[in-house]
Image 1 (cartoon, rainbow, N blue to C red):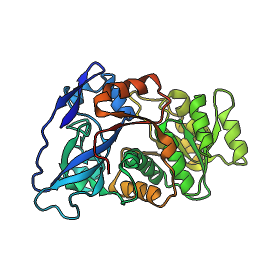
Image 2 (image 1 turned 180 degrees about the horizontal axis):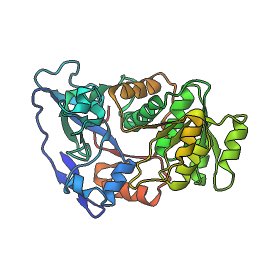
Image 3 (image 1 turned 180 degrees about the vertical axis):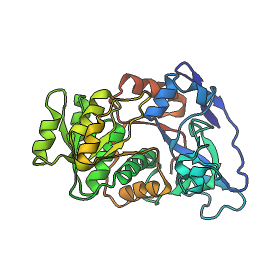
Image 4 (image 1 turned 30 degrees about the vertical axis):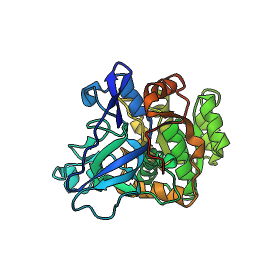
Length: 341
């Protein structure tokens, strides 16, 4: 058995590991595939060493099969294909008490705050598992986690069929939000300055605008006959997007903040007053978002195959991170950790 450890300073080491037998309420998994996301890249660049505490096994976008179940676990058995919702809540804080366990005050984000999936075998609490239908392969299953992020964003923004949606930022999450919103029947426009990402959106039947070449407010108002966007997703995390989000929102429009802003941003609060706008945040996902993501793929409503950019083995984990670091417009690089079903 092997595990890939993040060592700090953009370095990984692959070491021998010993499978951990599951305790009561736990399940041990044979890991199939692990995707690399933006948070993983922040770890790679050393920005989260205070949480990760290297050397540590990271990775949370995963799929795998059940190898062994602990005492008291029901609903899972050896051989089941599963994905992990990597949020371990405390169960006693005010957020948990209110039913918001996904934003627990003491949240353990598995793969960041504790050992993650970049290994052949991973033991987790059974309550974090979601079963995959048999016709979804493990490779496809590796994209369930980021797709669940998009499902949560769309749910938080209360997107409805026929609404005009603008997504500011065409990275992997922005593109997935576009696909989920489109599946809900919305009219979707992605705003992005990178030509590769614009082409990706267009190749997958999403309308686009490059705000470096066109005035986004004029385009949105013309597209919506002067109404504006019913929902704006701010996914870019940059000042021009924050400025644009209030300019293009319709009266009583909803603005959903998806990007992580490490510094306070200047927001036009007058437009919130004048147009009665709503501002909502969206962080990670709930169990229902995982169920929605699995259903979208299982029923064929969403094709995620175009999102896969490259595949590496566990021994090539350093190469995988370097590949994404040097090709940041790639959508989803995945690491094959061994389980093949």
